[in-house]
Image (cartoon, rainbow, N blue to C red; front, side, top):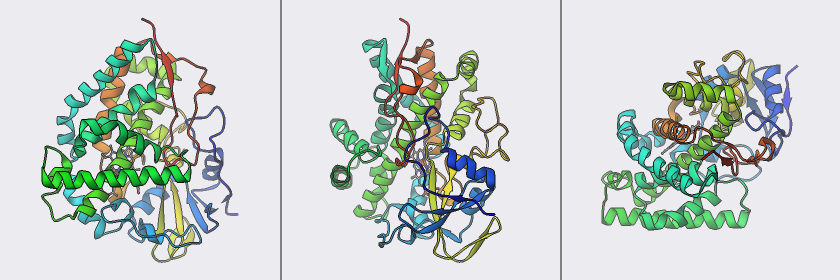
Length: 393
Ligand code: HEM
């Protein structure tokens, strides 16, 4: 009979900070698709099999539109102008297209030197205050924040307060009232930033976009999506990735012995950790998926992290194996919404992990692994709240 995933846990199971919730691994064991009730009470589906997740992502009969989400009892408003992550074609493409050329692998490689500089500045500061640090605040957060601020052209003097606000509305722990305040503050700031770029274009992506037919409101939405999608994801990959490596002496030694392994290591860490855990799609018509009929208007959860641990796709899926071929993983999604910042994120991770391990070859956790505070399952992006580390001097 068809498996049902009931309530998902609000915390990861103790001792398994890198694994998807046991309920989802178990569901995959029963088959690639399960019945599921959304936390808001609406009936839906949970897809945990690699092939099925990938096929839904490639299927235009499934929508990303925010207002179609059928998960709660009240109506959800459509995504604001510019927030194309939650739109379908043709609106999605109208926003995505002018951005694609600004995020190519070539353009991102040109950024490498700048990323190296930023990383080295962070590591210098760590070294100066060491031999211990919180890797989240000293390394994982500042690198992607500075990069995204430079891409958007956020002036240096605004960065600290700006970073604080976006951190608040993305850490999955801020209370409702404070969350709304942080969100509003970020929106207000972005409105001012767009107006400033329009008046005085500088050398950044946002200024370049003022040259298109996009309105200020649309540019504000695009900026918010770039921030929301680009900062928290990369920061958590860096911190959780460092944690996973420090917890696995054999894999860590392999990377030390062969620094050229870093490209492959980054792909495997993406697969293994899948910090962007899941996304939803809503059926526009009745669609058969894995032998089940998903009725028009029903919202499915696509569990990217469980799909990336599918034993039919990856042998020994719960093993971190930097030498394996992790190609085809779904950590950046698939289809029209495939992560726009994938190449940027890859460069950031390659540079940051290499520099970190090169600079601190004796890096290790400063607390027992079970004392590392992991984000709650309710956070959209998985990660650690802090990562105390130390090293020999
Ligand atoms: C979309 C993951 C870094 C910008 C996505 C999606 C995933 C993802 C899974 C697809 C969502 C869906 O299927 O609906 C990640 C991970 C990152 C990362 C794991 C870091 C390791 C970045 C960065 C940027 C960025 C650095 C930008 C600077 C975007 C945008 C979209 C997106 C704009 C929406 C694309 C669209 O709707 O067409 N990302 N991302 N991401 N990401 Fe990333």
